[in-house]
Length: 297
Image (cartoon, rainbow, N blue to C red):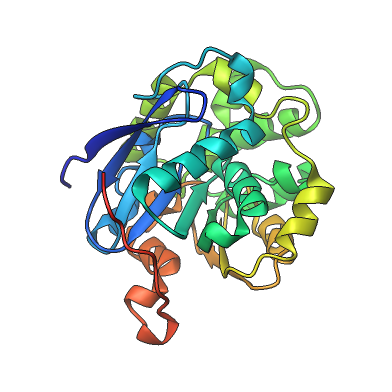
């Protein structure tokens, strides 16, 4: 896997923001979750063989600068950063992918700039921006398929404690295996690297009061004309398939894809299936669409 090239651009408030470019082909802007820097996305399971991945580090993370105003970490405030990236890249319309909490930013962007979205892909999305809720019972039901795993009893007990309001720091650590379809050395290394890249200050401010207006977001998304694809991991308690299905129903033109055996990072669990799920048009010309050309660094 070739190393990505790194570039930067200026946000409207003057904050210098970094982004990585990997691969060739038509551009796909990939917003990370967390919020954190984009390094954990890697090459999205080999997607860079088919698309030119443009992966920004959100402000205050990775190679991006720390803003003067900490309130600008709020998700709705970052919409201007995404629009500045689009303008910097010279794209008229963007093919936009977002993972986890990045989905909140992506749908707020699509709500504010629907004419700039060519296609939207939400991968194991957070549902905060649209006001959906995930019950503790649904989370527990989603993970029971993994009962044969040796770590399951401790992880399940910890998830029960979390859903019942009895969580400790150890509880959150114990449920980590549920995020991955395979809890192996590669998954452990991925999780350890993610922990090192986290910025608690950004995470706390991202969803602060005022960040989301679910009724307004739902109304805007109901008018979105761009095609939307939502991906769910079959055993992901963070974004259970039933919840992602409810999310898909908020759009007029949406497709739900459930990846068998996958957790919260489906490109790690089955890279080939993930790539086909994200970009079926690369393998099925009948589903092709015209993406805007990438025109600069």
